[in-house]
Length: 137
Image (cartoon, rainbow, N blue to C red; front, side, top):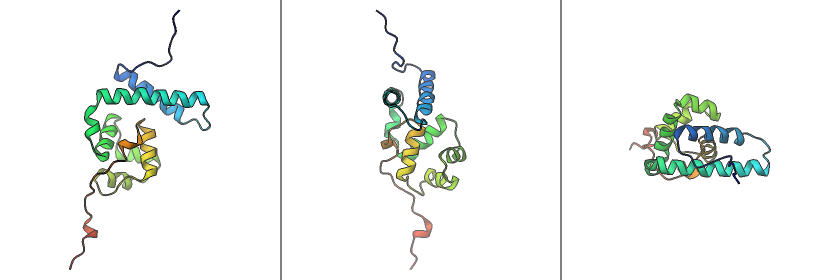
């Protein structure tokens, strides 16, 4: 008896991108059924497993470096990401240049957009001190 599984362990970058696209489509369903939610969970697990196997260096990155890396992987500019996430271009620019931190809402949007765990963008890192915040005596 042969059983055909709808999804298998990811073995190529092409398959990885295909699963990411499927996940994006499923994630945009407004009122998902239990089957759709189970499929989302499975795809997330498969994608995260592939990420950890193929990109171990990404685990050492701070959230800003992680964002820059996934933007590069998806050939996105800051303006593209801002438009897609419905946030200001200056917010993305400030984050990329370590001037502002990630909000909870932005962490959620990024994790959903790039099919990653929120923890990837929700870790401590240092911001560059603003020249406006320096008090002159």
